[in-house]
Image (cartoon, rainbow, N blue to C red; front, top):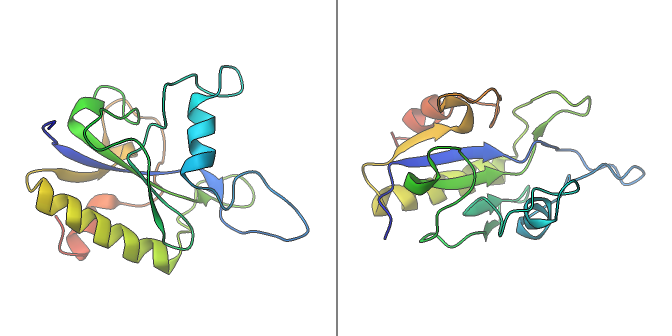
Length: 154
């Protein structure tokens, strides 16, 4: 098994609200959709061999497994071999700006999943994508360290 030093929290950078009259790209997505984004050939996708994340938490709080945990992910350049990637669906407002718009079931699922990962990898630090060096993104649109401390996971 890989040595895990980080549990990296991400967002899908998709809009949160589903309007039945307007279909905006990617509101209610999961592993299948993100896997296509990551594996479709360029320029449509990234051309990777699989989804970059190990877990995806959908808007309803359901947790879907992406890449197997024993495989290196593709979610934080330079840290993939020592991290587990968790992606929350959402993170972008209707006008395309970053926004902490995650649903209560997502927060509960994140807490349960991260607690489970911390039991398996007790030394792993919990941090957002934006907290890694050389990342110029707001992902996942909230302070993961403060969240982990508040939830007793840090």
